[in-house]
Length: 163
Image 1: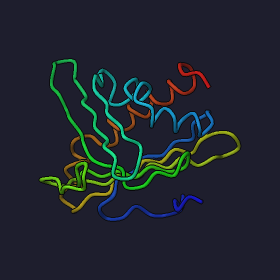
Image 2: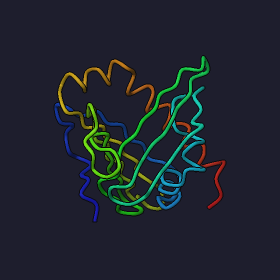
Image 3: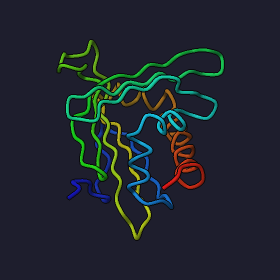
Image 4: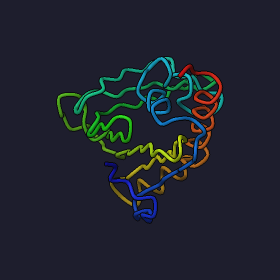
């Protein structure tokens, strides 16, 4: 059973985005957890994700490299904290594989996939360690960037990915 509550108010250190996707949650979950699909939608419009490593177990690595059209690169890395297929994923950059603390934790992310009459209510929450980190993430373009990634995910699961 999902611990996500749709009526929960965002915490002081949290940013979130939700959308009802016209695709079954198993498919949306696969798009999130299979690297060959994640690399097709991860990142805002114009970005590519040439690298993705995903060890889908608690403590397993989650690493991506996004590349902007100008060649700038944006690496992310962390570990999975919870995996409840096909309902919920939680990962953080606070640790690296082997539970080694990272240099500077920035956020923990929770992604939920709730079934709503065969469609998926998708919610991604970024929970930050401080109000300053939250504000910095928002200023970096959280809503626009994560929204564009979500647009790309929706396009993939509704038109470009087999069941």
